[in-house]
Image (tube, rainbow, N blue to C red; front, side, top):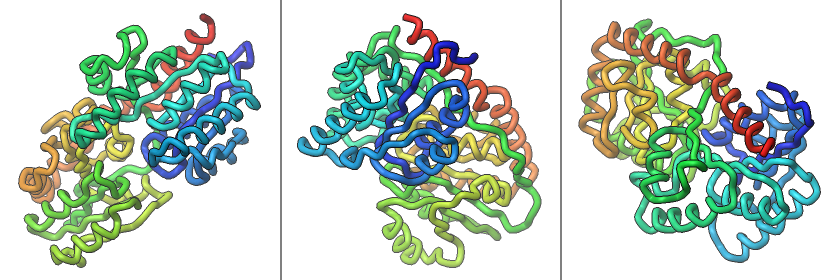
Length: 368
């Protein structure tokens, strides 16, 4: 679409670690950096800052922008963001993640800068502990007053925002996540040894423990790769030992070769307690893998039950094991479902679709 007025867009996000929100921002940076003057403000260096620097996008670290909550840290982070916006003087702020989203919108309003916020799954989603859910509802209702538009990455998140009266319908817009294509394709029936993979941060949200309990119920020649890091990594290691799964499960940590790992796998699983619209599932669909995932957030907008995979309830290890066993036992079914997922990706979830809709939104806001 282009940028005839040379507008400057500042992206704000709390953490720079490898994750769904960060991957989303990286696609925006990569797709729009030649048309806009982009900058990135984040609380730490890591995956996202490395990509920004490779693209020549100006990056500023905001060391007080951290995930944990305390009044003094909030004040310091707000002042950092305010000073950053004063120096960079963008025409639009696009904030991501709860902390940067809240403080970034306040600071943008104070400086008379228009803002957009993308919710990568709400803090009051299904499965989030009640006390966190109540805090999330109150803060998001308040912060919604200070932004022009709120992007939800799934229709389910838009419905949730309306249910809790976060913002008016006019402020809400759904733009599904999209990712670029990759040459790496899985061959779901290529081996008698079935490789199962889950790519996710080790956290309460992602719940690798349920998958590990499901693994104890499986039969046949299979193995599981868990890709990622996080606060529950050691807890997962202990559970693997306790369940006597050491010969079946490998924890690979953070990896930069996710497309290659997916291409070498046969089944993808995501056992989350809550979600927005998981990019990890999109990556699996792109590779042509069948997907088994919990029906939370916008997951059912990606996975159609018995078409390109199976949907289960959170923390239901028995049903998860049943569907996984079904795919272990049936190579042709793996191919059929993987092919259906690949088609759904091509039709609905490419990065070009996401970029076009996002840029249309930017231009509409900047013209008003």
